[in-house]
Image (cartoon, rainbow over all chains, first blue to last red; front, top):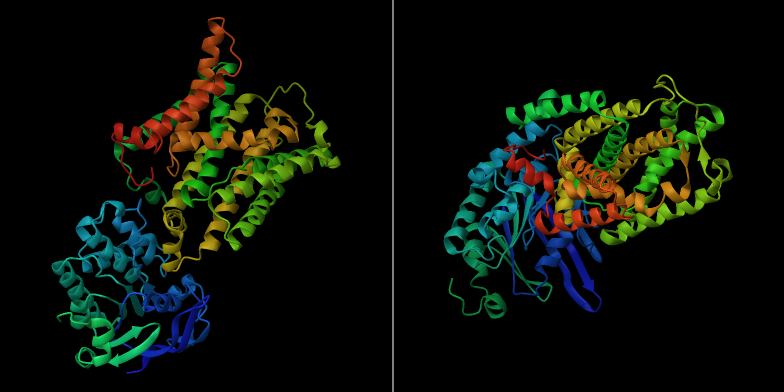
Length: 241
Length: 334
């Protein structure tokens, strides 16, 4: 398996604060990769550098064989990286379906064609029955799935998910987990997720990177990560897994 | 294309549309001179409102300087006619790109340097003010003394030179309004339209789904400016005189945005409904007051104020969304 995304020696500073410190990892094609760590570990900063919101102060980000660090978010998306927002940002006045149509229009010029595609995506995300509602009328779990649907409609090779499980009840988390798993298995989509909910991480990820104070403290298979003393000390603590 | 135009419209909506169109076409047969001038004004504001709505209602960019594009269109076509006898339709070939260029200039400055919201609005006012002062001192257009088009008693209607009776201008503006309505509907149901709405709703999220927001905001400004300039050409040839202090005045810009706000920002029929309410009722009010022998200066302005206030308080989405629901008409964006 070759790496679809490789982050090499990437750093980001905000004034005196080093948010991400010479971080490197590789996401193999077709895998589900999770980044975990305590609050303030620099996960979202890392995420935003990959998505093009920030450009790194050093290091390189290579996606699909090409360097992408410093490119603006819209160009990153057109290269094949879809993203969700930690605090969901649907287009509130548009219907659920039209939200997804916007995404589907990225690589399609015909609206009817985009609508057909959007409906397929909505079915996958269990939102088909709510397609006529305004996005602003959705509940949080539905909005979270709408974020994924909209990103998915852009036809990404890599899907970046920024805490899509946050704020979900366990049953909703399981629903999201099974949707994401099915996506990965059936379409071969590569997923990079930043997550706090260990239940979801353990169920989904085939590889995990643990960050603390902007740097890596562990990297590896889920089973090894949860037994790593450094990880238990700085992040997992006494949490029961 | 026809299918896309009528998609989502109920038979009832189509019937109502047909009826309104027939009434508008037949209106000059029954309307007197005064009513005709009022109708001309209504369609002028419906058309310019529609053009402004592309920027604000679709792409979410607040322009408070649309008089700039009216003025540029008016001055370009009128001066070419006065100096070289060039027909306004040919003048439009200069006027529309000129206005589009001015829009592109404002858009480039704002969108490149991330000037948004109220600051963008202030920039549009500023450029319009520059134009007002500039034209005040531009010798070629006769500066602040005003540019006058040669007027004589027209017996017939010369559509090519736009010399003729008010009825000609009425049909011209009616056609322009319908064309704008059709054009806007096609735009709104196309890829561009979806991208505009996405930008209006959440620009950062729009970029995250791959939309080149700079490009699509520029498109909105350029299309809106070019469309507005055509209203300027008609303005010049209808009134036959142009003063920078009048055409570029900020109150002209404000007038343009009132109809879509009252009718419903971002809706297709909002600008038309708003123009009928504001201009129609204001003129009725004035003539009713005159009829009973009361002459209150500024009554119209007070009426505008009351209209705006009540719409903002009672129907913050505008009259059209409420009205279309009442009439049992449904359909996206209509």
